[in-house]
Image (cartoon, rainbow, N blue to C red):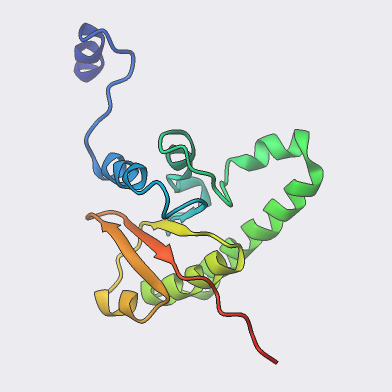
Length: 157
């Protein structure tokens, strides 16, 4: 309550706290051309991800946001079906993989499949795992890793 009153005393309705999420959003804002579309996910579940700050604070498009389900149900049934397929991929991924390195590898594949340029993740992974995958680390803090995905290599048959 004291923080809210101090914020109001400064003439602000909302005071931004300097935390890991805020720092990650600032990092996303600082790389305007590298990341045109984002994917963000959380080990805590799809509703826990900090995807909406990416969309509304960093002004970047998301290929998936858990909270889009509510709006799509009323406005766009076809896109809702695509959203549901994407959501199912995340649910299956969390039920299949348990080690952060395996989850990261699967998330990179999902991101590439859906043409995400960058991903914001809250995974604790070993640095060697990051170097084995087709990505570049753009930013990292104690909670988040911001990565740029390399484009998927098409299967040649």
